[in-house]
Image (tube, rainbow, N blue to C red; front, top):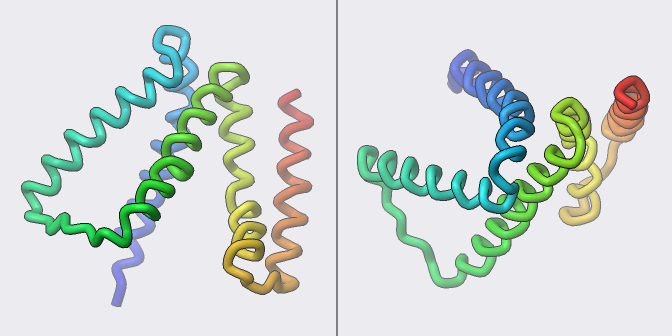
Length: 143
């Protein structure tokens, strides 16, 4: 049986760190350009992952056939995502960044349909509609 309490705590911690990141990035990009900040974040992350990997004795073997997909995920899922997020936060507000990011679940349903050919059920469609309405409602209040 999965430990849902620990999982929920970890998810709540991740969400609070992610939400707080917009405020911190808004302050930091006034001193460090977004692209440079991304490189600093990656340098810190690499050091942390190496230390964690050494302590937990992780096996880091990667098959040759997986390199292309790993590179694509790194470029799209991390680099482009983080750079555009930090540039957007620099050019806008931390609140706007958090509001726009809250639309992520709706985009996940849309991309799952387009890329994975998953069915959009009535519940999923209704969820997308409600999320979109909520997003535009919040956006209207901010602007």
